[in-house]
Image 1 (spheres, one colour):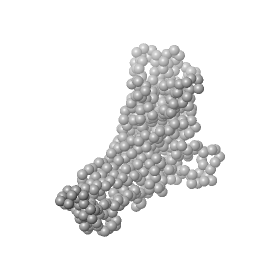
Image 2 (image 1 turned 30 degrees about the vertical axis):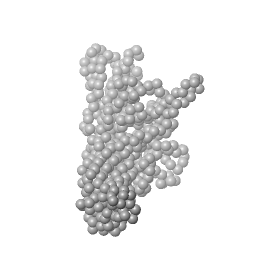
Image 3 (image 1 turned 90 degrees about the vertical axis):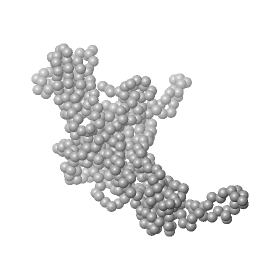
Image 4 (image 1 turned 135 degrees about the vertical axis):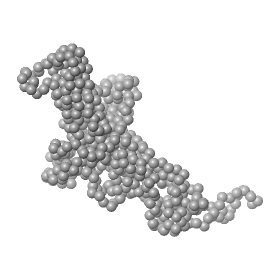
Length: 499
């Protein structure tokens, strides 16, 4: 007997509201007695962290503290055999004998909006995986399903897959299983209305006056400081460098940066300012939590890197206080890499981003550029959206939904309905850039308080029942292949499939 899953992949990755369809192929060489064929659509977020060694109470040895946390973000089950008509005419717990040959069973699921790990918490806890006990936790975050994520062997991953189990009647015969994974990229939140506001980061710098370097001569190697005269009467400029993004600061997967870089002369100087170098770097902060342990991993993508450019910004007659915009053509034709996941926050993994813009400037004239090159780095926290807009029919339905009455109407709104409109320009890089989402460390509010017991009871899913799949552009999304754990010594994936 063999069983496999044929998944119909209309797109490079799936998103919310998509219908996942496929066929279960069951090959039998002889008669086989089974009780059922069950197909599951699952999504899970797994973290495993190692802490400081702890003293064993029963020995003198110190053991590493290893914690495992698993959340079932998505769990849907369908039985494709026996058919409903056959179940109605047979007694419970019946078994069925299939003849040899090829058997096909179609299946279909619809991907929801929000995760549902709070309802599935019993499936993600208190079982043994690779010798570790995954204890249950009551800390759950009700949010839009997070994207597929890997590339952190031994620490964590988010994966989505379809699994089939052929349940055999004889207890001494092993059930047959097959699993196939798929890439998931969520629909982005509703964007705020267009506006002219900009979020920004700013740095200033004062260039120094160039002086003639003394050389050995008849008067000796050393001269008095009074003899060191300025090489040029030009006043060194004082400059301000701005990095600007739309407000809120949102960038999009697989799209160029909507970035503006402005340089402003702050004093009266006839010097010309030159762009000597430019580097734009996107940094992700992926926070893992496993029970009491936490760890943050940084990943960097260099979007653009230029050196030895010496591009004049304006001319010597540039007015003081006038903004000079750096040519956006240096970076606006370059899209974000397809391995950049959108920002998200789920029960044990969260991802936030910051943009670092390093601008190297020089000053002087076209024929005499000062050797002084100064680099100023602008740090801008940003949100990354998937680039898959929600269907207009869903936005209209949610805009007309009834308002639930609570004593505190300013409580945190659902994750899908918007993005923050007011945010500080310079928060620290560790701060999450999704303040409307429940923080990773935040505990569930006590029942009966001013907040809802949980984020709106999958209202998006209820409204999306009659809404079709997204009919629009799809982004290409890719993640590195999962690597085996260094400590496992095997060639299996870090977190093996579980029954």
